[in-house]
Image 1 (tube, rainbow, N blue to C red):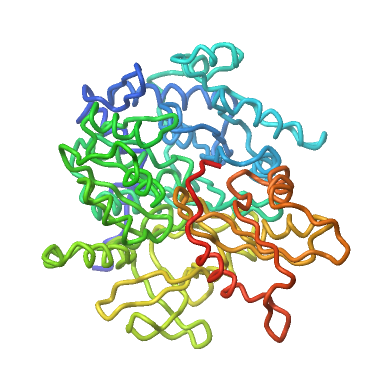
Image 2 (image 1 turned 45 degrees about the horizontal axis):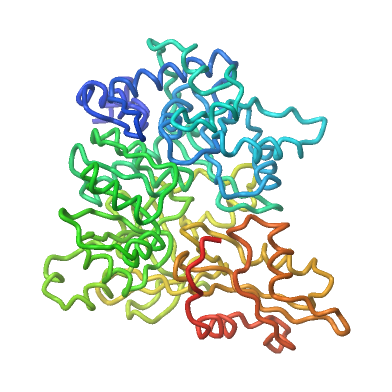
Length: 549
């Protein structure tokens, strides 16, 4: 069989962008997007994405250029997930919760050529651009106006709007297909770091794999009604912008939401599926007017280990919860708590405990393991032996942008991607996260580094020592809790003053919600602060009360 070789007939690069073409054929007259009074069909969405891709090329956007977007879950944000890579460019979705200085750093690091900006983020991005050095050319800005809002009409230049640009494009544009399936398609930053941003680069092939894999694992039927509660800027909405095109789903877009908005959307649109961090589950379970659903709604959660009690309360309302695990570096969920039919016969509390585990690899992943960091061997499958979670599969990132050292550190020649998360393997082969070796705090599904918060605290002239750990939070799941010792003779700041000091220097979601003053922080004999003791203290404080920060 040596004469049988790959050819152009069987070697077309894998890409999820083709899902949109198929949706326009199969589901052309079916609803693709609903947002307030705006409704599109799949044929309209396909045409609009082609027009926008065409318009981008007319502006000089070329293959390999980075195009950024700062926007919530509005129709433009959805369309950009297709239109930008259809122009040959690389999509960079930026967290709208970041501060201007951080956004400025990310735009410069990515060398972004153009930024689509939601009208409510206009001042934020303009401030970010003001931090550019004179010798660095700022990207072109195009504003996304919301014509259901009068405020939007006055906030943007009508000659530089999303809709205005789109209308200049050719609906018959032949979109620019990847030369190889390894071509970069998206760039996502793992956190809002101000020192060493980690830009995760994913290729067309990896995003195709994780999209198809995610639809299969969650058993998403054709033409679901999908409610966008998960931010699309968060790891590209775990691949579901492309996934909804693959199955001809209806995307219900929300600019912002609370429990009442979600329940109203479920009733109005007949929502069948939604995603969200455990904070969303907690929001739904604890809503004052929460009542059982008339029809079940599938909800996929990840981003932090969901408490079993929250899972129990959410499912008692009629939500069917699926739980998984992934990272920005995997473009979506690669471990899922695959449910066994016999578990349905167990008591509700036991079902919730089992479902709180992260689970087993999805079929698109080659291997998932927990290894001893010293020996490199797999830990015992006893549910108690700790090790680092490692992954291997086609949707693992290409690497970190402009960071070969960081890439090689987590993707060694041993063939594993090292997650930095600590977990155990249970006797039945199911994975469970137990801790995070990098002390990452997950607030509202967003990762934040305790080290970065500590670095700001140490700049306060009154602070002698600082350590930041996670404290349970009734709304966000986790929020930063700062333990501080003060310098001798320093004027003692109040908790409020420390919070305000951080708020002036950090994105709001990274600001400590709790500040605990101590004479001295516990340390090992070598002088290292014992964070595990501080975590126990933070937990003993109980969950901090509901606050939207």
